[in-house]
Length: 227
Image (tube, rainbow, N blue to C red; front, side):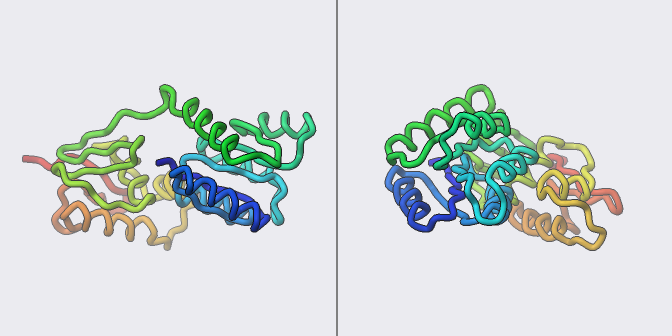
């Protein structure tokens, strides 16, 4: 089932939303502030975000703009602000839908289903195949030789980005910018660590690569093993 991220500072409202989502079979997580929520959205790549505008650290409109700058994840604004100007502003900032509190669990569920239907129409990329490696972005699954791979969300995003560019050398600074949404830092070993984890799951090593090939001082290339 889809994973929903709830950005809500009121602990009672947050708990009620998480309970309602869980009862309807959704995976759900939450954050009580804007910046933590933004970090969580970038790290966990949820299928949809429910965003309250009245967050304690950053106004929800600003959080919405920051999410839109780096992600196409659907966002439902759920807030007590009910004047027309606020609704128009949220939609102009990139919200996919707007719910005015208080609302019932059934109403929220209906809006989530509608937004997910709209966001999925014609927008789901086709699975990618590189040798015996098959990646499905819609289901967020990976298989090697027909066996499912247990990948973290970040490992999947990294592998998918490389698979989209199979045969090309991709610089580490590009991976940091596009997969981690971070500026490049010369001493940052984040990419190396995740590549090491991926190699282990792909049954290879840096010294004996099959799919992931390091090009010294340039970057990394994903390609099918040569027979």
